[in-house]
Image (tube, rainbow, N blue to C red; front, side, top):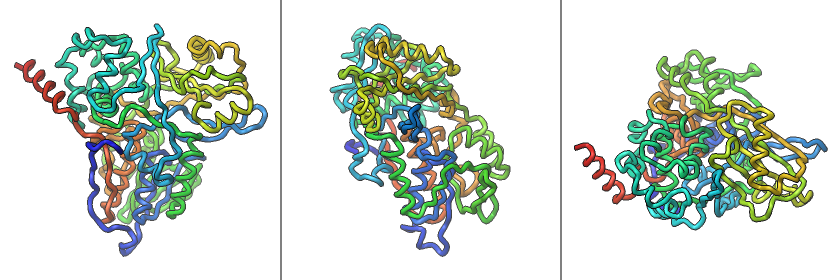
Length: 510
């Protein structure tokens, strides 16, 4: 939190703790991902009695970690793939500070280069942290973006990038897809692969299926809206070891009852509160509920819960969708990857491969395996695929061999591949009907990275922020003080760029 222009969003006042109430309230948090963990921590720290339900046997949701046996019976660390913990993820990092104020479980990656099919490479290393110099320097030194391209940009069409304001940007751009937006501003196609597709891939989608408002907001969060810089951190161990097991212990020390491997079937509402029913037939009474499940589970729970929410709210939940499937292929190789390879490499125009991670560069379990065997652990991602097929996997491996030729002669000691289709869809037109944190049922709140919150946050940070916001909804209902939240500025931070954008808009509207 080094940016002096970060914004504090103060919580509503109230009693300092729920222990000051005549009766201690009880809350049920459904979903043990980042959103649910944030909500559970925020509630328990204010003295609320909390039950946390997670259908998997591990916490963390889509950033969870677990172990799987290899062919020899040993235990191998596994997760759903690379995640970047940016410095402007204030609310997520505050959650992690509960287990280590110094965030010792994270370590910086000094670069994450991007390469295209012609071998051109962009890098974020050494960029200034101050906007807009960071974006200008990135553009000027990019091999796919020239000064003449800057001159050819359509200033009027590109103005929303310089004056992002949430939620106004969504109202203006959400009906447009990111690919069309980039075409309209005359952004060079070659540079799109490297400068903007990295954002759309973060949403596990392609520019043609991503809302232009999401793209503009991401550009604001990482380039023009924050001076935290573009370098991010990674977890130094598998996510369960580094993050969620310690946080689980923290929550349990606060009295939270953590129910792993427990899928919630339905939530019913009466005047005296809520009844949460699980698959085993058991049930729990609660005074408030945070639904922080992923999109498929949320839709299923709401469909089975006939007396929560009004018809309009239920329709909003039903309209939620998921992004196309993605594939993660983790390979344990019998020889090392060349030492100068980056820990993370993004690709453009090299389908079906979207990025490569060399896990033994930063993850303790992978590093130990590589040290013990003399090999390496490599992870390949393919986003927005139609389906997982043997040919797709062969093509992903072929791209690895093209980019890192030394791997072509390596044998695969063990391979773990997973396909998932549970990331929220953030497509054109989705924002207006997306359900918000506050629902039509008092005492029921939603959280997750697919839930609408009118703040400049995205991805893991949106999950953490909505989790805190959902807890605040319940705390306010109980009469207890909530938690402050922090974001990058809610509008374009550069007065010069806002002035120029305004002049362009006024001139073109005459």
